[in-house]
Length: 447
Image (cartoon, rainbow, N blue to C red):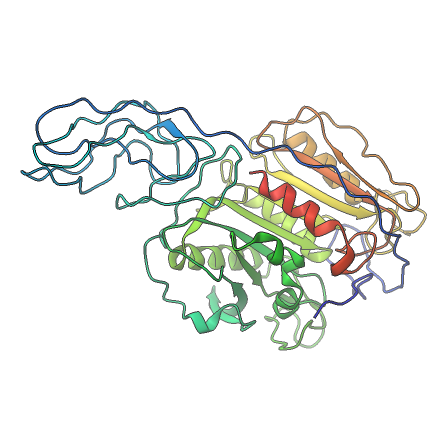
């Protein structure tokens, strides 16, 4: 059921110098649609074919669906051929599954006597798809973009998570450092284990929970995904009260004091959820995203900082390609974005946010001298190699989205200013009539 989300009654958060008090802020009227995104990248150039010799099939990479043949995949240790011209038993070793190989050298085999056709050169290029381990051909859900799909261990396997456990709003138990945590999962209704899917981590706000994320279609991104993504909503830890620092257990939509206090294995929960999903389902490891509102936005910001795809600064085996945050502030003691670990960054923030300040100077907020949503966008603008410009601040009755100039093409930064209060659904404060979800999905889909 869709419901209005104009303002969260918030308790005091572990966010830099901020106390989030309750209040009722008026939402701005519906604005005009935001700017459109750039089109996805093109497929790579075709690799060269194998030379003709007598014997078995070539060991060059297979041709994948989606995008033209790429330049990847030097001739590797592709499996031996049978005496009568059977097919190769293994894929080429030019680039591990999920990455574009280099070299583009043709396979060593040709058309054998009475056999089948030789390999067709390298692996797929940018914007296309990759072959999975085991030599089968996989299709990527990417409709463009410049980062090739990566194939998780769950590709070409049958999930051990029962189908009755997902797409029904049922929490899935998972053990994290000896503590039982949980998350809720949605998998495409036409799931294909040879097809690499995006993964979106939807992180709830204070007083929210995983059930609420399921009921709200993961910030309303699920219906926009058109079965191209897997969605997971991790569940938080109690922030205060007699059960403080213990895992949240509420079964209704929302849970009092449930949040993401620092030092409570919350990043370890993200690690465990991603690891379990990568083992069970065919995840595109190069297209994992995090998104959240308020406390969930702050946690998403932290995930971007601690788990970037571009050179993970920890021992974690995964990272996010981009994050989308709504009405964010920075957690106390959190790390700073680094130019060596960029992450594409989208943010929206209301100019009259009473809970978490827009820019530290807003008349609607008592918080002063705090970065606010604008300051956090500046941090990622620097990390992503962009030229900082103060985002256009919307005037009454509209919203405006600013795309930072000069960014690394792989890591854009977008900031959307809207006339309204503390909400994940800009302008209207309601899922069904806000422009926010579509702008977010357009941003994430460009990769």
